Each structure stands twice: as C-alpha cells, then as structure tokens.
Length: 108
Image 1 (cartoon, rainbow, N blue to C red):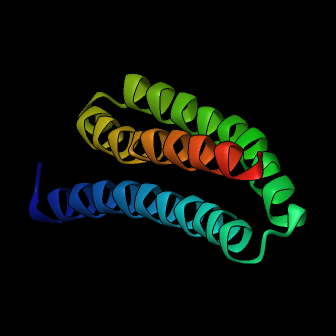
Image 2 (tube, rainbow, N blue to C red; image 1 turned 135 degrees about the vertical axis):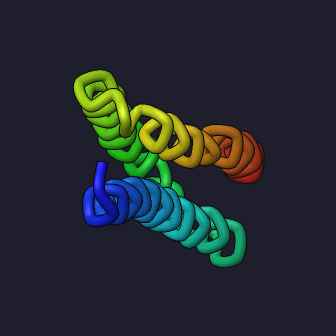
C-alpha cells in the first residue's frame, strides 16, 4: 500500500465512525427532547413522539447495523471500524430503556 491508499483508508474509517456518531447523536437528541418534553410539560404528544421514535429508530438502527456488518464482512479491512461504529450505536439501547421506563412510570 502506498501513502495515498493508507490516507484514503484512514479517511474511510473516520467517515464510518463519524456517520455512527452522528446517528447516535441524532437519536439521542430526539429521544431526550421527547423524554424531557413529556416530563416537563406532561404533554401526551411528547410521549407519543418518543414511542414512535422508539419504533422507527429501532428499525432504522437495526438496518444500519446490518448494513455495517455486511460492509465489514465484504470489506475485511473496514471490519474493525464497522464494529466500533456498531458499538457506538448500541450505546443508545440502555439510554432508551431508561427513558422508556421512567416515561411509562411518569404517565401513570
């Protein structure tokens, strides 16, 4: 591998991680808006929005995770970056569970 190929390889790995961090941040921010909006205003619309985010966000994140797994499997040099990106995306799971438990208990 020459220097330009190594540089391009590092750039591609950082793009994968940037995408995962951006998706994590987007889902986290939207979930936090719904969670704190419902807690502070007691508006049911925030709870419904959070529930819809759980459904569609889970579906979309699973598709992205599957895509990253397939991409890493096909392009073996990118597998490590793909697994790191998947790890970043999986951080949202315990946060979403915590928000859901608190939100459901707060509705009652």
